[in-house]
Length: 132
Length: 384
Image 1: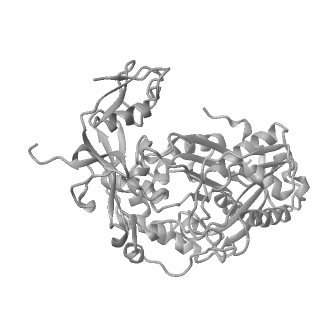
Image 2: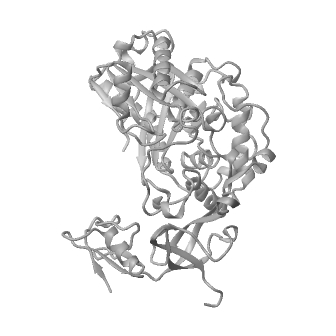
Image 3: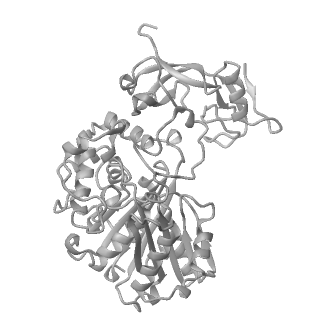
């Protein structure tokens, strides 16, 4: 299902968050040039057209870069911060769960999941199981 | 596009520092006052001569306006563009334009922060970043760590290469009595220090200090009337492609790849002409990527370029001769200190670390998360 961004209604970021809150991960696409972008905007950063629709994202991605942020154990311990390239092209900052922070590697195939954190929906990624 | 019209039309005639390292009991504006007083004394001008103010800070919404009030000025030009640590190199461009257009006669460019003693820790007015904050990157280090990790993956850059940048900076700092971090530092020390955001340790990160700087600029036609040799602005160019690291188009190539060639073309100089290179070293990865983007070595070769120790004092490549943000001073935004060291080197005022009669210096400032890139070329009178 596509969600069309109109001049009169809410902006792309709000619509993207609303869809996420309903359990749907989407990406903004430009109907003029066909390219996806992230973070969500009301005009296409590639071609300038304002014909933006939100389409369901594949959720498939690849780790483009990764860092382990060091934190004292009593404060929760080390955690991962990564940049993920969606199969559709755009990049987002996220976290890879389900594996130790130091085991997250550039080039790793990951898939998105929506979790609830700080009372808000949050996109995280998990390694794609081998053979999946 | 290269616009050579401004080449050599303005010059830095006075420079000054204030509160370098720690300024307990003094506000950020107090040490801006100290630095401005020093810069005016350096060139023999009076406070009331300043009729253009160019300033940025990390904590004020209208920093240039605050500086005007503190100094009791009534300038004709007040300019407060904040592009992060590169702001003050961008201010050079705006000041040169304003001077050339006759909008002002004496421009002050200034910055100060008491982030070490005043706040107790790194502070910033930066907003919450909606698409990054939930993942808790440690700003700014994680933004640079993500690029460093990618650079290592793509090009085989090693943690030892990164560490070499910190070690080289220390060899220069050890010759600079104003540098905040002096003493021995080895590659092993850097590698063994506390990891902050992999692959960057605390020794791969710049210092957190107090400090202020001030630069006085006039048109070139009156610059020869001052007591010290002027440093002419021969080239300057700014480029900006993104704000936050998740929107950085390419994690291993910055907009310095455009600002550098434009500034050098405006100045009409090549790499071999440069006697001094001042690169914003917020983290050890930044000079490595800027050496590549500015054309001192091919893309991807920055780690191997620095590995032979050439950046160390006596190594043959004069980089960050004050000790840089890694070992000299880093009060939140560092760009102005690149310019002050370059002017002092061009004048021959640098004591034990003085280069042999340098004529041309390249200064490169970085702002945000690899975001705003500004390159400036300064030269002595014989380079005009």
